[in-house]
Length: 247
Image 1 (tube, helix red, strand yellow):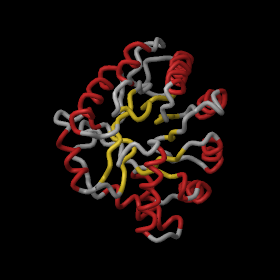
Image 2 (cartoon, one colour; image 1 turned 120 degrees about the horizontal axis):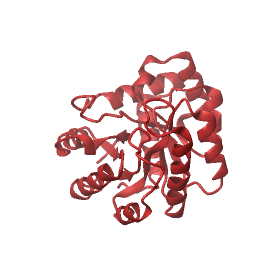
Image 3 (cartoon, helix red, strand yellow; image 1 turned 60 degrees about the vertical axis):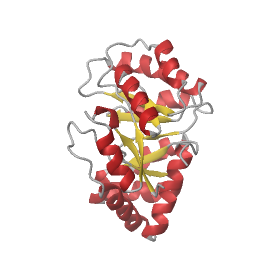
Image 4 (cartoon, helix red, strand yellow; image 1 turned 30 degrees about the vertical axis):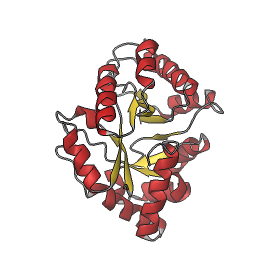
């Protein structure tokens, strides 16, 4: 049924979630719906149960209002069979109401929650790599995998996340094939890369069904691989990322 995956898309921010979902389904793209906060997580789970896509619950640092994590509310959501991971969560030093120290406290509680339920992570990070890596290293050996979303960073930063067993999830920036992106992805290798769009219907407009295929072709060029084999490998990566939940 599916031949590729969008491992980070904000389906639940669309007014009518079935619109992007059906566009993705018709193109053979498996959506992984991520969340922004508790209310968005609730809507995401509801729509995922109705439409049948894997979703992730979590609190985006831009939307975090306090360092308090409502474990009871998220525990209730995590009981759904559609919940395949925890995210979007992470650290960000730009555009956040919450101080970085409070973000770090919140993230540690989120990671404890994800670890206890064996949920892979979908991580957001901006200008806080050293802080995020330090926290993740404190959980090393306990994490259940995951990815760093919208990866555009250096080979050196890639190495840190790869050593923690995480995938590098790349979006439209891979089409530019910058030297830094090429170096990082060549270092990672095909087995540790995911594709995403980060579309949300609010800031991005309609879902572009061609973007994932264009990303796959760009990755194939960077790694000097056959496009069809690259597509198959990337979809297999998505299945491993989700612990093989989709059929």
